[in-house]
Length: 251
Image 1 (cartoon, rainbow, N blue to C red):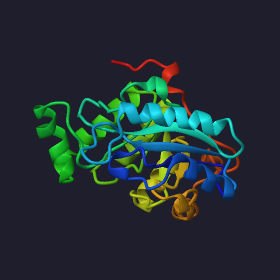
Image 2 (cartoon, rainbow, N blue to C red; image 1 turned 135 degrees about the horizontal axis):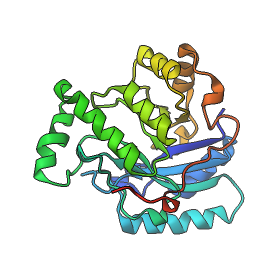
Image 3 (cartoon, rainbow, N blue to C red; image 1 turned 180 degrees about the vertical axis):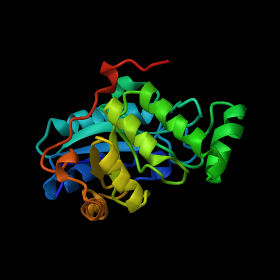
Image 4 (cartoon, rainbow, N blue to C red; image 1 turned 30 degrees about the horizontal axis):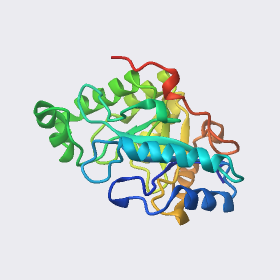
């Protein structure tokens, strides 16, 4: 059982990629005994499912109103997209957010035609020859932004997961084990556990209220690879996530 689930999509995502309102998600979490949830809709440059500044402001007001009531606390975050080999992400104004997560997704708008050619298009086809460049892009983003966690490392992109985990450990960024599936092999994860001190967070990646708090897949993976439970930050108490507006983004 987890105390907080920090990767949940809502109807504030583009095309209603998440199916439920914040109130419905909060109520589902409360029924399941969670103390806290984090709304993390897709970043602004996703071509289909991205949120936008106006929706984020509405979500901020709604989350604040819900937090004046009884029930699980609602944090407003963002699952920002990595959009360039320079480590840029599409996080927009951080002042409305309680946390920022970052991951790679297909079908995002690059900041320039050059970056589309060098980064987003090769990543779309999982180019093995660009593995080192993709890994460097992740590490640059980890160093540049006040990220709380990296979502589903290894999904849809070729990476050196161990090198990324080392950077996460150095910069206090959590390694997400995702409720849909864990995208790194058991061997890779064993290396990460043994060779780094990175801490982990297990999240549902729920797009529907009934999936909130569903983390059986990552917990089974953690047991299989011998991940010590004390390295998972949201099991017995809510996670302490970085406040993005309290730290400067490094240009």
